[in-house]
Image (cartoon, rainbow, N blue to C red):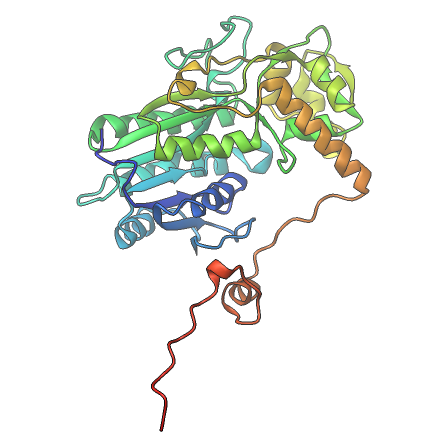
Length: 368
C-alpha cells in the first residue's frame, strides 16, 4: 500500500480533463473539501464548467511537460481519464498516440526520481475482453480475452494496460487501480451505441440478439471517485447488475431494430456511417453479434454501491431521449470561455451564497 490515508488532503492531477469523463470527475472532486488541489490537463478547452480546478491546456502529453507539472504541484494522485475507447473519434495512429504513447509518458512522469505520486487510477474499458462465441458468460478480472484483438481500439487499450501493470510491478510505492467499464449510457453521453439507440432505427446483425451490460454515466463518475479515494489497488470490472437482450434495449428506447447481414459488415458499415444512418465502428460489430458480460462483484466488495442496474440505466437513458425529443432541440453544450469564467468567479457583482461571500473588513478606530 502507498500510505495514503482517507484523511490525507489530496493533491490530484486529472489527465484528460477536457474529455467528457475527466471534466465530470474534476467537478466531483471539487465538492470534496479534503481534496486540497485539483489540476486538470487537456489538449482542448474543458467541456464543463470548473470552479476549483486549475485547468492547464497542453498541446501534447510529452514526458517533459507531464514531469514538470507533476513536480510543480506535488501531485500525490493521478487520475487518467484520457484513454480513447471510440474509434470514430480518431484514426488508428491517433488512438495509438493517445492511448499508448500518452500513457507511457504519463507513467514515466509518475515514476520519475523524487516523484510524490502514491496513487494512480486509470479508466479503461470492457473492450479489452473482446466479444467472441468462445467467451464465458461473465468475465472476471483474472480472465483474458478468448481471441486476439481485431480492432485498433482494443489493441491500443491492451497495450496501455500492459504498460500500467509493468509500472505497478516496478513501483511498489504506488497504488495502481484500473477500472474496466461496461457499456455506458447517459443523458449527456454521445457514443456510437447511444446514437444508434437514440435514432428511429437501430442496427443489429441478422440471427443475433446479444445480451448487453450497461452502466449509467453518473455511476461511472462515482466509481472513479470511489477508486481514487477509497478502493484498494488492483483491476476491477465496473458495470450495472444483470444483462438484457439488444431487442429489449431497443424496445425500451423506442427504436426499431433493423437486422443487417452478419457477413462482411465492414463493406457497408462505412457508407452507412457517413450517411448518418447507423454508427458501426469495428469495435461495435462483435458486441452486436455476441454481447459481453463482466462479473463486477469484486468492485462492489470495496464498498461501492451502484445507483442503477443495467436495465435501470437503459430506462433512465430512454427517459432522457424522450425529454430531448419533446424539447424539439438538443441540449446546449457548455463552451469554456476564459473571460466569462473569470467574471463569474471573481466579479463583485455576481450574487453568491452567504458562505462564498467575503467577510467584511474590520472597521478602523473611530476618529474623534
